[in-house]
Length: 587
Image (tube, rainbow, N blue to C red):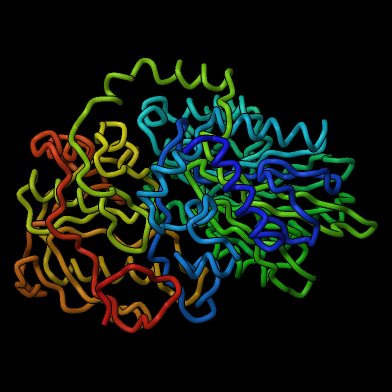
């Protein structure tokens, strides 16, 4: 599609979305989605979960994001047409492509790739210029230093330097901590902004042993918040790192730190900030995940805004949450550099008087690459280009990951583990990061690394009993569908290969998984052992080669990504859930 035609379609779609889809204050928005007239005094720009994707990519939004109870039919648990209707997004428009999985292949070929730091930089510079000197902040919600080959090989340093070029003012973290405590310290030292995290404390024994802390008296391992004068107003930005890092990732990498949601400590900090400083707004830069942020906003008062991340939810409209202290605006800005959130604040005598929020899709073919950032990206990739561009196979179908259950790229990973390890069953973590490959494209080593690049990639093949396999599925399922958001750890269901089952998300703990069978129909016997292949073990290092080597070997041998069977479960008791679309296996 020609650029002029694309711009025209954006303008028409933007006019159709109107105030509800692009702004929530009632103030008209320009039909050029990347332009905005001056509004208020301060502009906050927010991106999150880019997972080290420096170049433009394809990224398919989920067709399964189930919500139940108080989360039913509410963001982020709306997919496809239900999401478009909620946000008044016209179907078959560039916005529909950005925010949904609908007609993904055709739309992706029509509108092109999204993201890319050189294109993101162009947009950020434009928005900063419009706001005027000293009137904007750029905030990074974390999961920035991990997710690509170059990030893994440089231990995240390529992303630190890229963020310094972007001009990031403050960030918090999650996967950043998988580079171990020493790697985190080195990257923070090189970072030009401020790393904030109020919810990470030093363990008592670590304090006693003299392990460095930001504040020995409070026990904070990192600076809990930062004050910034923006647009002539004082804004406090509090950091909220992923609270379950030592559970979701190896605790051995960060032995001296303790994490948690810490809503009580957060409330005390908010009160302290308001008592000690005449702040005009308090913003929580969060990596909790949207469901957790929504609950947190309801139990903590004094927060004006939560800029959220972790669950990769591209939610076009912010959610206003009532609490005892007033109201809190809660947002989530998607992932992979695909979106840039822009929050313009208008202040009165008593704090924020009005706001405008836009979640802007970063269409890379509409934004000229920034020359300085483009040169940096080329330089940082150059030593590994041959490895990154190594062709492995041709994609026969759309390869994607995101969704509560198996995506097609997950299935390729599971099939590779079974084939190479001669296993009956394969298990793969329910990660939400990983780029998308269109049918007919060459799957390169870079695309495999996008799906697998972690600092604990070792594989295993071992015997597990049917009872053990069920316990694993039940444990992850309880994390995903626990009715209390504070017990949800983000991520999606463990991916499986060679295994089929029925999942009833609304059943009680330990009762969600049933009717487990092998692909040939053989029922899983609780007392029998099965040969299981897996990777990404959290509690100890596995003995096998890195998962990317396993997948690369499999793809080079087959020369294609043909998937014989997608091991998605039959869902029970989900009804006509608006978080489910284009999913055949329900009962």
